[in-house]
Image 1 (cartoon, rainbow, N blue to C red):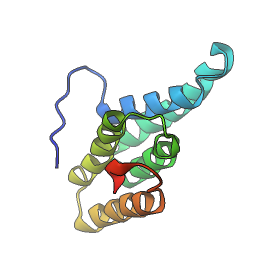
Image 2 (cartoon, rainbow, N blue to C red):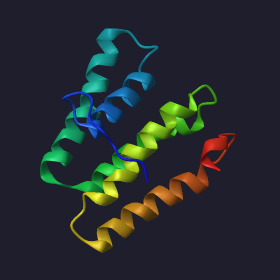
Image 3 (cartoon, rainbow, N blue to C red):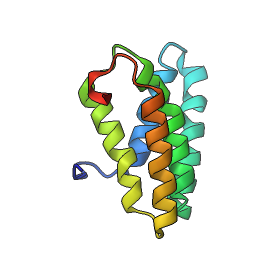
Length: 120
């Protein structure tokens, strides 16, 4: 498993949620996009502060569909997002919760293989 090295002050999980939300709303104007980007970021921040890692994994995996299904997403971006999501397993306090997060990740990846060689 890759090691995450923080190169900025923003929490990597929050950066992933923000990046995916920005991609999802890129075609909308700033007036529409800004509140739509802020909503999942606020939800993610609440989950991080509360230590709700399973909920955080669900949120990140649901929004990651945009990257998983897009043929134009660079493999390095996808690798970064998946590394951050997989790192959630190391944050949990119990093996049961770690297993649940791992099951969510596996279910998403096996369901969304598509044409992404990196996912295979």
